[in-house]
Length: 180
Length: 332
Image 1 (tube, rainbow over the protein chains, first blue to last red):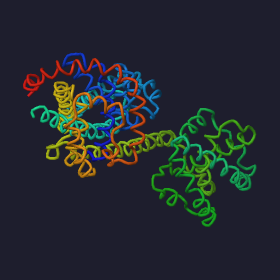
Image 2: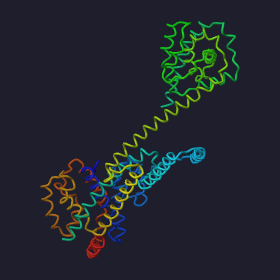
Image 3: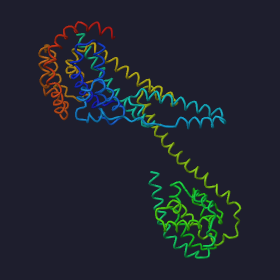
């Protein structure tokens, strides 16, 4: 599952479109502002590749829309930008689970061998890591289960690799251009 | 899924009930009617017992036909208990007295149901298969004692727990397998991750990889910001120059070579001028299908922006050009 050339092409096109839009705002600012705008446009371009079919892209689009609504609208043109921007991601409300878990814990704690203890510890660590992954992947806290989370992570990593590959080749070429 | 299964079981049970009610009344007649009066709390307990999980109910219903036909073949005196218990997960009490009681109770239930349609479908349907099976056992059941009825009352409960536990375990297993498959894919995707054992470590590695990619994007956009004012110029030319490596040769190389020198020679003014018009068609031959759409989008998006933009960006071009070498060095 490596980034395909068609994906890169698509990303490049979208990104170029985004850059065209943000150019008026970044031309007369400092480097950090420009960097922010470039990153935003790249993110929107990456998210728009998925056309809102994945959770992470929706989350990214919504996050970007709060910063630059016009840009997102333009880049997303044609793929139901309105619905994607305004759609509320529903966080799953888990009520009373904590209480149930706590009560279970108390009842279980009485009889537990060393191996069970170790297994429980490993489980806890995995849970912690999963939470970490949730915080890293955009929209991770809205993904209802672990299977979905891993699936989205897969997709997100592929998209990120596409983004990085394209950006790197552009930056390298741009810097080489300036050196000349 | 569970709901539909249950519903199917129920509706199927209703059908079975009706056809076997006739059988029941034919066999038993008035002889058993006086015996039918069960203590209410006992009946309640039995109904509770017969509240089977839907899968079990389906299983039972599934076997109803064969068991009833078997019963018809073996006749009344035969010992039906072994075939009854050969049905895999079926763990009903072998005590014929109890079974007889169940049969009678279910007769009542079905009668009630016939009278009042909205009522106890669950009870009758789940009780029904049991009754059909126990029907032949009625004949030789009278000598048994009712002593272990209390024990029997509780016996289906653990089995029910077992069953739901089994189903849960199965679901858990399927989920775990799914997760493992995803994990394997992720391991392949993340470099250097395929040799690591243990879920937590793999997850660690994945998090690191994602974070490093995100940082790379930050860094690259920073570098790009340093060379920004010429970036859109570069995008076109880079498209041409980098196509070979970037797009795996999916572009038409010769047309790119033609476009390249022309663009390099362009001055700042002509560069801006060129932007007001759609890009030359031969430059985009690599993507004949999508191009018209893209062009249209870009034009409508920026056609009106560029006039106001030109003046300011031209001024800035000079200033930021001076910044470049320092910034690039700082970044590197």
